[in-house]
Image (cartoon, helix red, strand yellow):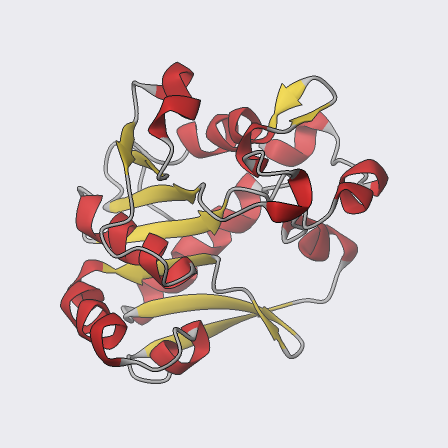
Length: 207
């Protein structure tokens, strides 16, 4: 059983960066689905679980309606999602942070809670969900103690590979059942075609 929202020592971070070239530069977090922005749907889910919510973005002016949350830019730019993870770790008020990509419109609160339980049980540097051979490092929990190691990695690596970095820290993989519900929670939108074809979870799926 996970702690209450008031007791939990994990922050949440929405990675709202990326070039978004396939969407003509439009920030995917602000794309509307059924009239509601993706980031609004995400915050609705997160707010029931976390008391510290961070938005990592290099365009803070696009999130003026989210000023009640912590908004920070990448401290290390042009290094891909690891830069966003580093910024989230640096800004988090708690000892760990649940990090996810802002183009995931079908977050499951129940799945996030299950993953928190896994992290609390294993006390690792990184807790990464997996379905079969697919890993989800952008729907994962990272401990702040790896911040300096990540900073050093980004300063010396030839390639900014998430998987390479995960191999250098105490990573535990949370094996999930290959169900439609779990797969849908990890859907992300990469193209306008995917946006037009996506089937959203029912409202109860966001609890």
